[in-house]
Each structure stands twice: as C-alpha cells, then as structure tokens.
Length: 315
Image (cartoon, rainbow, N blue to C red):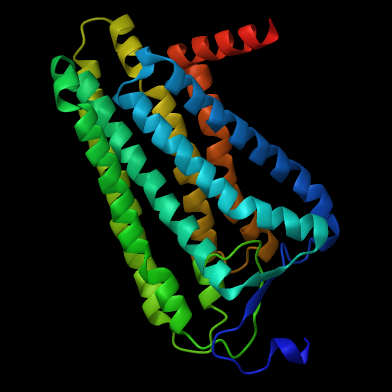
C-alpha cells in the first residue's frame, strides 16, 4: 500500500472506492447487468410517474404512494450507479470526502423513506379492505400528503447523525474503501477511533425503522387476512387479496435482499467480500427495477394505460 494512503490525516480530501475487490478483471462484465438494471429502473419509474400524472382516474392514495415510491427508487439507484459505473468503465475511483458523506446520507435516507412508504401502502390496503366505505374520507389528499411528509421527515432526521458522526472520526489509517459506494459501515470502519457510537446508532436505526416498519406492515396484513377470510366466497377472497399482491411482491423485493445483505455483513464473517458488495448493490438496484414491472403486470389500471401508451407511441 502506498504511503499516500497511510499518511496521518484527520479528514481525507478524498476516498478511494475499489469497486469489487477480487473481481477487478470482471468489472466490465459486471457493469452490463448493473447498467441494464439501472436503465430498466429509470425508464420504468419514469413511465409509472407519467402514467399516473396523465390519467385522472389514477389520482388516488394507492397511486400517490406508488409515485412516492417511484421517486424514491429513482433517487436510490441514481445515488450509487453513476459512480459505480465510472469505477467499472473508467477506473475513476476517487470521491471527495464531502461527496462520500453526501452519498452515504442519500442512500440511507431514501432507503428509510422507501421503508416508510411500504408502511403507508400497507395502511392504504388495510383501510381499502377492512373499512372500504370510509377509504376516501380517511385517506384524503391532505392526509396522503401529511403521511408522505412524515415519512420524509422521519428518515431525514434519523439519518442526519450518520454523516456528522462519520465526519468527526479521525481517518489516519487509510482512505481506501473496499466498496462501490460510500456505505456507512464501510466508511467508518476506516477510522482509527472507537466507532461504537456509529455502530450502536446503526443498530438502533435498524430496530427503530426497519423493525417497527415490518411490525406495522405485519399487523396490517393480519387484519387484512382476517377481513379476507371472513368473506363468503372463495372468489371474493381471492379477488380482494389480489389487490395486495403487488404490494407484497414489492415488500419482499425490498426487505429480503436488504436483510440478507445486513445479516451477511454482521454475521457472515466467512462470506467473501466481493459477494457482500454485490449483495449490497443488489438491494439498492433490484427493488427500483422490479417495482415498475410488478405494478405494471399486477395492477390492471397501470397495465392498461401502459399498453395504451406503447400502442399510441407505435402508431
């Protein structure tokens, strides 16, 4: 390791992102699926936003929350992919310290926002199925806007200590980060100080945000299932629960890769580093790519408008 990377400094001017250590020779090949997923995510989420904007019949709580999720997915994927691709394609590994902290904040902030939106969507499904006659009076446009604002403020405030804590640590060992982006733990691990505050705060956020969100989602679906099973016919049960399938698929595509990445990071000490880094990218790329596909296929209104859009474009 070069002397420039081990020189004593408090706050480095730049960090060096290695990409995927051990797979440097395959960076070009790895960039192909990454770039494909990013392209699908960008196009798919913009199309969702366009369809909802153009069709007044889709101006309702479920689709407003879907638009919030689409915007969140666009920010999440764009927070990491341009820099990751510049590492893969141009070997552009340097990132300014302030830019690294900004990227860290956006990644974790919008991950928290996405989690909150899934809770809001679960609440929407709960009201629509368990109290359908009051759905329009409970989830008014004002209430939807307040829920969205609360989700954004919660995540923005809770994640704010991440960059401030990371900035205060002295980085006197190395400025090399074995990752494709500035993940919180990957950055603070480079500090030559007792970083237990950062680690404990990260654990607190995992429990208080992801833990509580999954609890509320589970409680919503327990009530939904009770309402569904009380319906008189099998067809009515399937039709009613079918309105939740898109939401459930999106939840699984978000939480399963995130949980897997978290568990391998915390407990998978024998898991190769390159596998952990690939998984850390997947949980930020796969959900933004899959969500528009899931809602385009599973939601009839969006599927029909999507078909009309491409039919008119083709004509």
